[in-house]
Length: 171
Image (cartoon, rainbow, N blue to C red; front, side, top):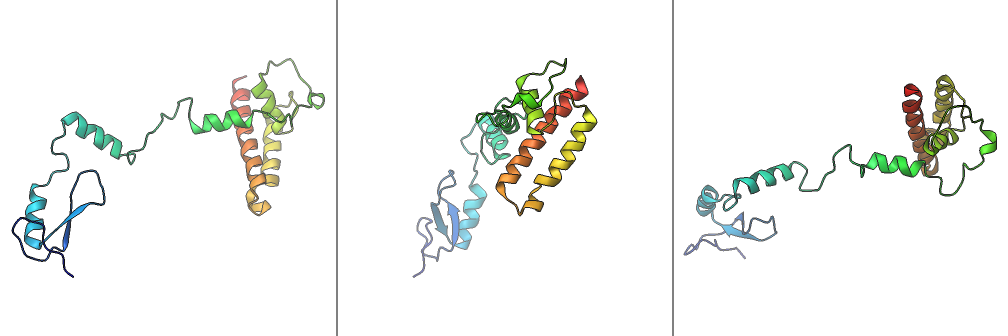
């Protein structure tokens, strides 16, 4: 069964699809070859929109019409990941007896980073680097058959290392 062209008073076969609405819906019209050409010449997706609405649509189209966040925003994925990494909800790293607290003033985040990497608070930067290399080799997913547990541990270690690098290069 062949579809008839939906152009007024046309009896030709309608084999070419045209959008029925501007909302990217699945609704479409079927036209013959001559009428699809006429339709395409007149059709304008932005017809009826103001310049401001067109610019907003085009700007939104750059991100597939999905909301985005600024890279430095507090809701940023990496900030959330980092905050959750150093949050010791289960008190895994609560044993302070094995850590020597020196004269440095570390906040809890700093201390957590040392604990995650199994370092002493008075360890210097070369000791941190050496320990990081050892831990990366130990917990790397390639050495552990892609085990998610080791992958998560490596993520925490990497975040702790990045944090320590930032605070130790400043101090």
